[in-house]
Image (cartoon, rainbow, N blue to C red):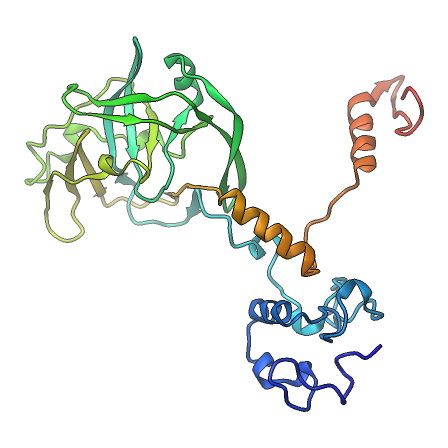
Length: 337
């Protein structure tokens, strides 16, 4: 077996007479690009040789970084945590500190949601940073809509969330009933990442001359029922607008009514939120990544458990009980346990 450090082998990257670990082109790459280049050239991730894969490499642990037990070459070692290695999860809600405004108005409009003879009045958040439309689960129940059995993954930096989708079309109307939107599909979530305090009141803008006579409607005790993303493009049409100076709030007229955006009062605050939702990538893309990982022999960072271990954990969790001052734990693999 000949490894990457064998001087008789040419560099697989530049075809010069040196090992890959000494190749200036390879060393100039980022760790992520080194993984990509090694995968493309069919190199072993343990020794960077080209005649075998990592699973057949005789070197057991070639990473020299202190505390690293990963089976990869030191040049492929990354200090990035497992959560940030996967760059395919996008943000749905993040928290930052010491934002200079406490009252930030979002694109929220009063609406009526209809399905057949059922109707709910509330608000919709027009989020042009989302490529999906979301509806609250309690609204789906009140409207008499049906959920599909299939689940969709919503990707966020905080982790993945499973959501079902509404299989029946429903209608979103402006409060006066003049304009309406047909929504043929929406994802169902338990809650929306929009704080109720973001709902705008008409008297909040009386100190701004360009907004003082703005015809804003208001729903008493109304809540945000929908998040309308860019999959409903007509909801984001700008039919009219009112602009002030720089750093001033401004208003836009949409099909569903007027909405005001940007900061309204310069008061110190310690928390702000950014809302961004995205539907998970297509099944085809997920399958392609799965096969790339499997057949390229990539080191996977997540710790998996076997079906037997999982079954044992389930038995212990469900059947452990407290009796006479101590816990009684069943034997997971014993018959009848």
